[in-house]
Length: 272
Ligand code: SAM
Image 1 (cartoon, protein in one colour):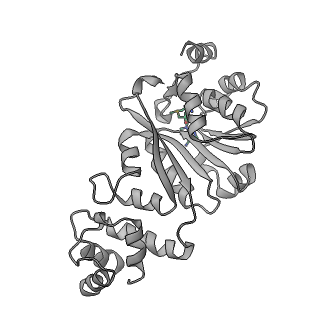
Image 2 (cartoon, rainbow, N blue to C red):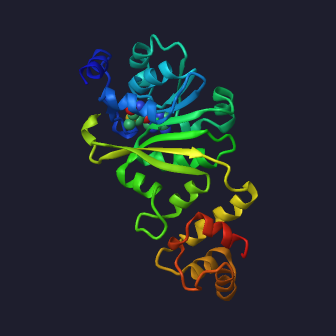
């Protein structure tokens, strides 16, 4: 804790609320994230939001190479100090949303792992981008708000289960690897967090996936509506045809979308 405060104070760093800057102060947690991400010497790591560089330095020690995107230019002096000995770490000062997929491909290649402790308001878009992009990482290890973590690993039919759960499950297996108390950050945020690791897989055929993605989006469009109603209004098919497809796939015509897991959506997509 004092180590990070010292380096920030020495460089007269001012926290910018806009960038969601809550830095991890617990060194055991930093080591645990590297271990959860299963980083080894052959790995290339794409880190988003290195902050003061405490996680970046540990990632660099464990990995072959680290490329980190940081939006805040004011962290330049802090990062040059904390990453002085991390010769295999490159920091790109840029909003990751402005880095095109081709740029990232050029920096990290086709085999890389994504690690990020991000502001909570961009976590979901970042997860969705890297889950759905062409050059997918092998795994994604992210710090998320506890409630978001619960949603990512939720079972079909539960209150937490939603479009994001199904969309992520279509591409990989998500697991909460640890719960993180808010006091492990400086400044202390208003919420508790957890680390989620998503290991990507090729379980589903990519052509099927395009169809299933559309189906999932439609199924969760209005939570109070039945699946047949959602499919009818979102996919532009008649309610009768939607109900028939649902029954042909082996479900009752009046079910709700949130009761179907990803295998069910894949099955249903064959009848739409
Ligand atoms: N990784 C550090 C840690 O764990 O202590 C810092 C985490 S802090 C929650 C989030 C970091 O992401 C900040 O350094 C912030 O400036 C950076 N950041 C915010 N938005 C970003 C964006 N769009 N692109 C890249 N970095 C961003």
